[in-house]
Image 1 (cartoon, rainbow, N blue to C red):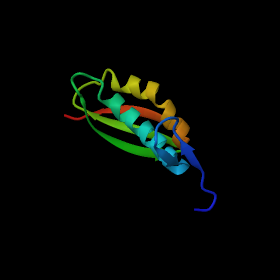
Image 2 (cartoon, one colour):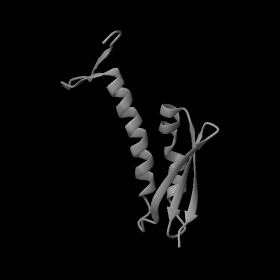
Image 3 (cartoon, helix red, strand yellow):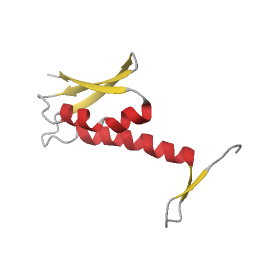
Length: 97
């Protein structure tokens, strides 16, 4: 690979290519948001539709009841996503009956 750069992770024996590190950071950002959707003990979020408009990502939360924790969690946990993907994140709840 031309211009490849490698990273050693301290004492661990794992050596990752920087593109692998970027992949892990992106997946971590997605996992962080997904984890935030599952915080409510009643698990009211049944699905998510993702749309992009004007450089922002909207998470349409399909819920069976009013989500109490998910919207706040998305707001608090979206910083890594915004850093990695360069897009603001917002959420709206759509109650499914």
